[in-house]
Every structure is written in structure tokens, then in C-alpha cells.
Length: 607
Image (cartoon, rainbow, N blue to C red; front, top):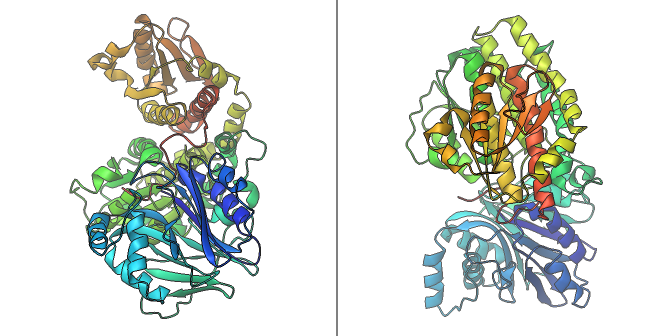
């Protein structure tokens, strides 16, 4: 969940490390710090709070640092509250480390080290690693790292510096992501390539139990036996502009506006002669005809994309689809067979629970398909097949464009599956594909008129609770709308199937309570309007998202946001945009840091 960076070169590194950490703040912002080779010592500066509020302030009070090598960290707290003492880097003057992940057996290691005379200052699991390295360090860093890694259990990516080895960084990973960047006469480590894009696009992927050594000669890689490993150099297809706000107040708003182009980039290579074509990942018509069941396993927003996918696949493909939260799937002993397909959805491709579900599915003999945004990520590498979305970097913690392109992939998958299984005609398939191709232009029309979403947000700012309701695809979509609002506004919000209101939830309605209804599905429109009237009768303030051609009357809706016409099946891609904007504007009106919601981090690489 945390972000780590490192730099070795000829330039002063403090500003380089701080700027890189700012690009990783989406991974955690409870504290931040750096440790550098200053003179003959390791100099550490760290502070609680966001980077500008803590670390930058502390650095401004220090004598300017001249070091040309060091490591940095931005923290999402797991073990120990956010505080200066629990901040990383952590060390003892001769060794300093930064850590992303969780050490599961840290208590056992801590007891052993205490028995050897070590005194602990922080509440972190990371300090046990730092002290275990110190215990094993007898002058050979590689030996100490290998012995330490053999004893610790859990997921970790570590950046390590030793006072005795000036301007040298060692790095190792197990499960948690870590890359090694290659620049002109300089090298980097980072949790994500976005951290170093203003220096280089070239990087190596550090694999499980591999060690990297970065010094003035560049980066070298070793296994646990000290053997040199040759690695392929990758080049990021993102540019620096993609990691900048580009005049927008927040990344979240920028990324909402980037959705049309992200859809185009995702679907265009996968449409051939007006028909869906996913052959690039090995999904042949024969395979699609052979699956008996489909499981979609994901977390959070990615799981909500899977719910929309379920409705669409079942409606037109006529094959059972089960959508499960990854943290539940992996522990409930699911019934999965070799004739089934398990689809794993993750923006980062590193989500710990989703990767564990992938491993379980493969052990049970099922074929696995990953839908991820990050090339070379763990889930992408380990799945049997992978479809990359092309969202580009998404730096706001609350996902928007990643969700949208996941939807786009599910639509292409559903169309090709339905056609392969003769569940729809070629004419219908072509019509649906054409509708999907038109979606970016329709979304741009919605984005041209943000005023309705801003007005709706003004009605939510003072609310303590609200409901989202819908039926069918509208219900699946309302779950994502509710999550977005919770994430960035901190208002308690729940999504509920509109037809279930009378089974308990309608008791929550009080005078003036906002209810956001999604009513875009033609076949259940009248029933949804009936439910909207029910909550209005009990005092709710009804905000309704509906299609331009069919809207509820004033006896049901207090305020209506309309979206252009498209096929019912495709409507979630349009209707989600005002829901995203409502969440954004509500959070902004409340004065929240919309890009960095409290207690959240972007990439959940631990349980």
C-alpha cells in the first residue's frame, strides 16, 4: 500500500526523491520521509502527514542536502498509528530501509531480536526487518539481505542502504511491486513507473526473490545465490503529461474527462471489421463456447465493473456469471471446475486478494483471464490470458477511468461470447459494437454539461446519509455511484435494489433525505419510477439520472439529470459519468482533498 523510491546518480537527490514521492502519494499519505548519504553518515528526514505538510516543511528547516543517492517512502499505516516515529525510512544509523507490504511473522522476529538485546522504538513491522538486517550484517550486504529474506514471511518490497556502501542502494521484492528505472547515468527504484517518468521511461521489473544493486555503474540483478540475472528492459507507454494535472484542480476531475479517449484506446485495437476480436489474448470462439460458468473476482470498483459485466453477459450470452469479492472468494472454498473461466479484474494488477484468488482458481484447474491496466503486473503475468485496458496512469485514489475501460472490456467480451455461442445474431452484435464505438462521443456530450451534477452536489453537502437506488443494470451502476460518493465526500451512502425498499430500507427515509435514483433501463422504468414515488411520499429529495427520451414526472423527481440515448445494455457507461461528477463536486464543495481521501490508498497490495 505504501510507495517507495530510490535514486543513485550525480545530481542532488533530495528534490528528486520528494517529487517522486508526490507521484506515489496515491499509495498512502499518512507520513513520508527520505534517507540519504550525506557526508559519511545516513541522514534521515521524515514526518507525519502529507508530503507538503510534513516532509517538505521539515526539509525546509534543514541545511540543504547535497547527497546524490538515497531512498524515500510515503506511508499508508498498517502497523502503528501515523506518527513521526512510525514513519519510514527506518534504521539505526548504519542501515536504513523503506518497505511496502506486511511482515506476517514480525512478532516472532521481534521477540528473537529483543532476546539479543535490541530495543524497539516504533510500532511498525518494518522495524523488525531493519533490525534483523542489522543482526545479520557482518560487512556483506547481500549475505545479510538473503538471510533476512529467508526468515521473513509476508509480502514486501524493500529499498535498503548501508552506511558502509556509499551511494549504493539494494532492493528486493516478494509479492509487492517494485521496478528499477534506467536513466542516463542514474538509476531508480520505485513502486510505480509514474514516480520516475520525468527522468526515464525505461525500467526493469524486479521479480520474486530477486535482488537489485544500484550504484554509479548502473543496476545489476542477482538471485539468492549471488548469480547475475539478465533482465529485459521495458519502456513505459505513458508520458509525463499523463501524470500531471494539466490545469484541472484535481486528478480525479482530469481523469473523468480522460474517459472518452481511454475508451477509444481500449476498444479500437479489439474491433475488426465491425466485430469484437479478443484473439490477442487467446480467447477463441471455441474456448468461449466451451465454458460452463464464469466467475468474476475483484475488489471495490473493479468488482462493480464485474457486476455490470455479469448483467450484460447473462442477458445476451446466456451463461451463468458469479461475481465475488476476492477476499471472500479465496476463503470460502468455491466450487470451480476446469470447464469454468475465472476473470480477475484489477486496475493495478497487484491487488493481494485478487492475486490470491487467481492462484486458487488455477489450482482448481479453471482457466483464468486478467483484466488489468498495468503491464507486466503480477496478476497479468500469472493469469492464463490477459486483456490490458488502456487507461494510462490513474493517480486519484477514487477510480473513474479505470472503471470505465473495465466496462468497455466487459462489453467486448460479452459481445464476442454471445456471438460465438450463437446467442445473438451477427446483425445484433454489429449493432452493439457500433454503439460501443459511439460511446466516447456521447460521454463527451455529458461532460460538456457539468452544471446538473454540480447542482445535485450542492444538495448533498449537508446530508449525513443518503441512498442510491436502481433496478437491473441501474442497480449495478448505483453501487459504484454510492462508493464514489463515500470515498471522496465521507457522507454515509448505501446502494439498494429499488424493488427491495419495502423490505426494510424505506424505514430510513426522513424528511429531506437525498435519494439518487438511476432510471435508464426501459424494461423496468415504470417500476423504478414507482419506487421513486414511494420514497418521495416519505419525504425524500429525489435526484434522478434518466435518459433524455424518458424521464419521470415532477410527482416523482425533484431534480433530473439526463444522458443521451443509447442501447439499454450500454447505458451504464453514460449514466456513471454524472454519478462520478456528483461525487467529485460534493467532495470538493466539502473542502476535501478529493485525490487523497482519508484512510484510503490506491493499490491494495496487502490483505
